[in-house]
Amino acid sequence: MPNTLALKPHILVVDDDDRLRALLRRYLAEQGFVASTASSAKDARAKLKHLAYDLVVLDIMMPGETGLDLTRSLREAAPSRNLPIILLTARGEAGDRIAGLEVGADDYVHKPFEPRELVLRINAILRRVPKPEIVKADTKLGAWLYNAERDELRNGDEVVRLTDMEAKLMRLLAAAPGKALSREALAEAGSAVNDRTVDVQVTRLRRKIEADVKNPRYLVTVRGEGYMLMPDRE
Image (cartoon, rainbow, N blue to C red):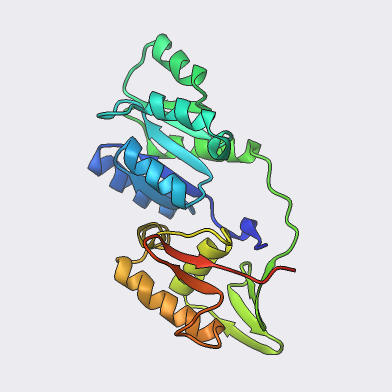
């Protein structure tokens, strides 16, 4: 399995305010995080289905399903039961803060807030989250070994360095072996311009690891879902 500690913490920001989402995505990226965004609880569910996140920043007051409702739902589902959640709220009443904590939020921040305060709270929570035990840094792909720490592919003495975009996609795919990741999710998390850009980068990666690019064995297309990395089992 890949060394997931080589990945930057991946934060999902869920808010119906377009300007705030854009601001936080840019600021979190500047602070060393990978930042994705969702405009609603429904949008967030779709992203959580396809990618693993280290923490969710979630607005309480959204049209439709509220942040409290989504938090409660995530706490009831096994895959997301321990996912850290910070709630954003414009409300100052103690009862609302308590309600957020009661449904399972780890912390809350009042709007308006300084982005730096949010980063401090994110870091404080992530420091408390147990780090997974790292068993092996390399992912075996036939004759190739992919190393996430060095962003390189190695075949014996032959070493291939990956471009920044290729490295981002490989880290995401290698962090979820055997799981299909949508083009949209890969584009957003990998900072690609669009879905087409992801397709181009996947083709480039296949040329480096596949014996037959037209019939890939390791980096496969899952029809209707996206792409999936299928490393060799030890």
